Image (cartoon, rainbow, N blue to C red; front, side, top):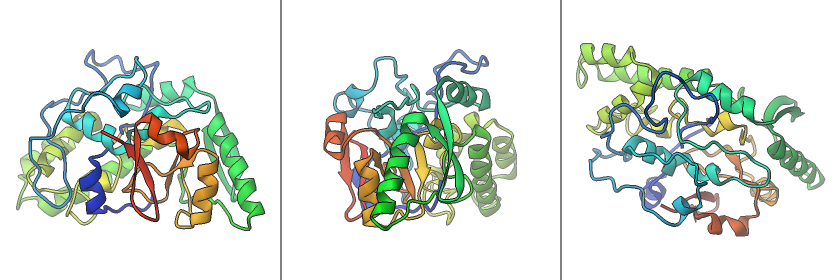
Length: 303
């Protein structure tokens, strides 16, 4: 997901949103809603403080009222957290096809979504990237405008665009493994660590968030929630083909050019990350999104 950090004032003011994508070939392993995690009582992670169980339910109206009628709204606290953290892209327009649920359970679920939408591959800034057709078309126009303005738009890192479920699992497992090395046996028993490590990623996420409710954090510095370091498996916007990590994320001119073509920053803990929303900035509030941050601005669900 690129460079990540948390601005505590922003996180406290915003209350967060996402779980990655897919709609047609959902896993046949379960009949429960794909947006729910195994334990349904996981509290919401809050940076640098012990978490509580009093997270309000996602309110109706505003952002929630703009979601498609067939969108599978989360009914558990883990799903609600992800919707707040990553959910802006569920309202993408301009030819974009966003997922209809917050979290995908496995590789087959993600592949089914990716095969249901039209993707295209192009070389940008010397790197081969893959995006949904509408997102790529807008990006190439932004790249051309940037070139005319004397600046560059360069994909960042080894996986800047479309990602598989497996790639998100690898990133997640690395943080979980490091966390257990940090907390066993002082805060977590070896038996619990072994049990949780053996779970599927879908089952594991609420278990990790539950530990974080006790102040046992799995982020890079072990001082805040893991979701501020890595997207839980099945939640990354990159799995949709509507996200791109950009090297020049700190350049205001680059951000303005990308915004002109419908690309915005929508995850306040992920600075290089841009999301194709397919609308002009003036239209974002009507989608139930609000602007947070100063200088570098992020459009997040107003819930």
